[in-house]
Amino acid sequence: MFLFGNIFDIFITPVQMFYYQIEWRKSFGNLWKLNGFSFRAVYLYKPEDIEIVLSSTRYLDKSYPYTFLYPWLHEGLLTSAGEKWQHRRKMLTPAFHFLILKRFFATFCDHAQKLVNTVQKEVNKDESDLFPLISKATLGVICETAMGTTTGDDGDSLANKYFKPLHTLAWTMLYRVARIWYYSDAIFQFSGVAKIQKDALNTLEKFTTHIIQDRREYRKNNNISTECIDDVEDDVYGKKPKLAMLDLLLDEEKKGNIDEKGITEEVDTFMFEGHDTTATALCFMIMRLANEPDIQDKIAAEMKSIFGDSQRALTIEDLSKMKYLECCIKESLRMYPSVPFISRYIKEDVQIGDHTVPYNTMVNFNVFDIHRNPNIFPDPEKFIPERFLPENCISRHPYAYIPFSAGPRNCIGQKFALMELKTMMSSLLRRFKLEPVTKPEDLTFTTDVVLRTTHPIYVRFRNRISAL
Image (cartoon, rainbow, N blue to C red; front, side):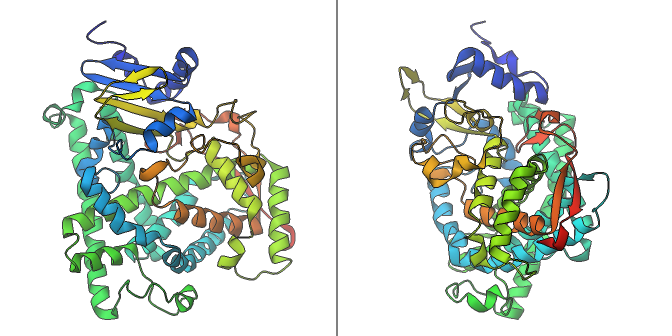
């Protein structure tokens, strides 16, 4: 097996691939490799080993499978490397400044209320399929904040049109990962899957092009600019035209820092990273809380301490008071990380403990499994939000918990995501009790770009007495 190594171990179903990786770690320990042909991958699990790679500016390049996203995302922030990535990261960082996020808060609240109204229609049903409900809300948020467009009354239609090609592209990526002969574009282009991918790409390209053209026209008519980001108070209450991340890109285009192709790359990247991951996080958290009534009660008590019996609107100041809810969000992301797998490509030898990882190696991190290390998180299958109280985090290695990756190439939108999660969850839990249908032990996970299960996730929604 010198030539092929253990490469054939990956030619399995997506479900098997998910669980086999966990079994391999149990069998081979906290550092093991998968190799064959010129393909070589190393898996790391110990926080101190993870830190060596993720904390360094020398190992910023994503691994080869990310190139399967190039036909769609090209060289956007997720997939670019080297100087281009550094330039884009520096350029886009202001889009996630607190003052910009503060502008987005009104949008978060609008879509949280729409979600509440949608869920109200589900009350007293025997079960509700979470993902269609939640994904419509998160798509609305990212459309408005990233691109400055609203889904409006056509939200269901837009969601259906957008999600199908998006999930198709994620599927084609994984299809290629599991079939090494399709790593070659020259071979892949003659496959039936390439035709499916092309059709999905055409749909998404039309969607993005239309959005960018509409925003250009809107800016001409409304004098939109990102230069006034320090003046946010009126905008929080909806008195000024809302900015979008696309506006920052269009302003940078005027300065000669990005072209139209680059704008398209980053808009597609925002859409890819900004809605499906959040929808996934919300679905798993709602499911888990439905199975944890005592923890739901603690969140309800925190909401009551903030709002009393008032039905007043949520404010941005309220979010900072939701300490226990934040712990619950972090614990849910520990157990159900939206992105369960990340990878880097190293171009030089790296010393990991007693082992030398050779250059031209993919270094992989199974975030799902890393977060269930009993030496770091005792009783890892139990939902214990108190793990994330400040006093319980002090001694924990900073690379033991990486739901947003870590280091210089961490998720640029993590503050955005946490603000959206808090807004959505607090709005739901002020109005509804969650009752279990799907239980944690019912979940069967499958390998995908984001954490997915083989079957839908269901809960029951019930009104809270007096709505807190």
